[in-house]
Each structure stands twice: as structure tokens, then as C-alpha cells.
Image 1: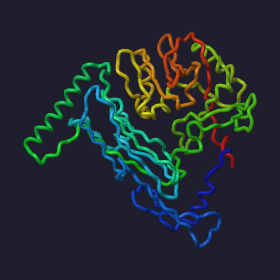
Image 2: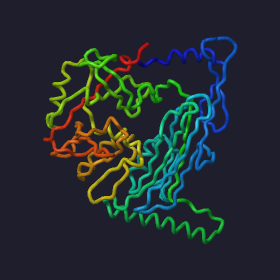
Image 3: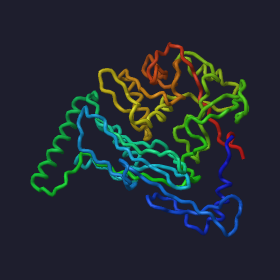
Image 4: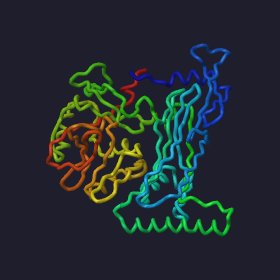
Length: 410
């Protein structure tokens, strides 16, 4: 079902050792060597490496600077989209980092990539530490040779009402004063180039697909189906009482990860009960399994749905809808869930995340408030993770912690 790739790469290295392997980004042609199929002689095939970045149908550098001047509460969300094309013969892995970010002109709102401020930390601050929200995402992290394009997307939004009138007013005033100062400088010096309110530098890279431990494991992408026998604790070939249909729910499983998280299909695992009985029912129903299990947590869902930086929204009564934003850094996911529970809100997301939409309610093990737990369900074209009364009856599904070695065949 799944095949190891390591032996193939060892063969490639034997015949490619005397060649320069180019694995960094380039918007011009680069080359690297590969072995072909089986013939290890003096002849070596050559593949083209050609990654192109486009904005508005014009070729641009991979050092992307986002500059925005229109910044105010209630603004229409703005988006910048860079199209990434793989015109070469080899698959590429995509990623991005934030090199720097400046918000208006206060030094404390100027971030530079360093040991203290990692890209994830800067991204988290831009997404959550201001009444406006700046988010970035890649439509895919792997772009196969001559495949459909990928997109790098940056969005900026400022809800009309964030729930903190003082903060909204203070930042609205700061944005106005900043723009006023820029106008005054321009009047004094006609050659002065006005600074934008927000300026962010991204480095979007495309590299050769390798087996580095910190790389995304494409054998275990979110949504991949795995037939897993919970009694024998390994993959299986046909559905049975113990051979369950499961799906990978990790948002970014890495090659270096030893385990993978699998969610059974609702049709393979039919268990219902209240939130208060969640743990006891789950323990009882999986007591005969040899596979390791854990409870499904609300943040498992957030880590997946947060990658949609346009349609995944925090919905709070009497407050403007807000984009969920990135939840990669620190305890951000837990903090958001706690805040949503305190304000009687919920998180809405598109039904494209098939593993986390269902006509029935399905429990997570995460507490919403003193009388409710987090559950998820679907209605028409939208799904939501929300607070359900602890006494309600919903489906209960475990998460299987499977060793990759029990899934990948030699």
C-alpha cells in the first residue's frame, strides 16, 4: 500500500555524487543529475529545474514584499496572490518564511527574522496580536512536475467590530496619524516616496523533494485513507470488525515523525453518548484493541481548517466575523478555543474538509464551558465546531496513534 522511498534515493546518490545538486529556488533554469532507471554507468540523465512565480500574469521574484496602505476598521478584506508554476521535470516542495514585518512606525511593531523571532512567531503575531489580521498560506506544499499551479496567498482584514472598542479606536487613530505624517513628508519633499502602513517581506521557496526529517511526509497527507486493523495494530486489506477504514488527520506529518494520527470513518466506528461519558465510553469500546488510541481534541480540527485564510471564521454574537488565522505557534489554538467558549461563539468552515463535517454531531474531548463540550457538525454547505450541551447525545470517535512502520511496507 505504502512503499518506502529510501532505497531509491541511495541509488540516486551513488551516481550523482560528482554532480552539483541544485535544490534552492530559482526563477531561471537550473539543473541536477539523476540516475535514470537501472543503468549505473557513465551516462547520466539530466532533468530541468524551472520554477516560476507570477503576480497578475507577470513574472516576479520569490522574494515577495507585501505593501498595504488602506488600513481601517471595516475595510474590505484584501488579498495578494502569487502563482507558482513548476515548468521543470522534477517535483518541488514549497514553503515560505517571513523575513521581516513592519506595522506603522513603532519599533515594537517591527519584526525581523532571528533566533528570538522565528517565522512562525512573527506570523502568529501578525495573525492575532492586532485588531486587524494578516494571514498567509500555500494552496499546496508539493508541486509535481508540470502539474496544476500552486498559489501563495496573503490576506489582510480588519473587522468593523472586534469586541474591543478602545483597541479599535486606538489603532484606527494610529493608522490615520501614520498616513497623515506620510502626506506631510510628501508635501515637504516631492521626491519622497510614501511608506505603506504595512510592509511584510516573504521568502517563498521551492526545493527538490527529499527525505529530510523536517520535510512534509507526502505518504501521510491529511485525508489519505488507510485500512487499519486495531486488533493486530497494522494495515489490513479488507474491511472487517477489526479492520477499520481510517483517514490521516495530521495537518502536517513530517518524515521524521514515527507515528501518524488516524480517524476512523463514522461508518466503521458507531459509538454514541454524552460529553460527560466521553472518556469512559471510549475506554470501554477500545479496551480490546492493541492499537494505541487517544481522544479527539478540538485543536486537531483547528490545525486543519486554519489553512483556509478566507472562509474559516470565528463567529461571535454581536461582534464582526473574524478570520481564524494561523494556529501553528505555541498555545494559540487552546487560547482561541477558550476565548470562543467564553463569548458563546463558534468556528465556521467549508465542507471541503470532509473528515470534519457530518450531518450528526460528533464530540471532541475539549471543554467549551461549564455546561458544554466542543462538537462539530454540518449544515448545508458549511460546517462548524461549536458548544453542544454536555447532556446531548453525539457520536464519539477515537484517534488511533499508529506507527508508520506498521503501515509502510518494505
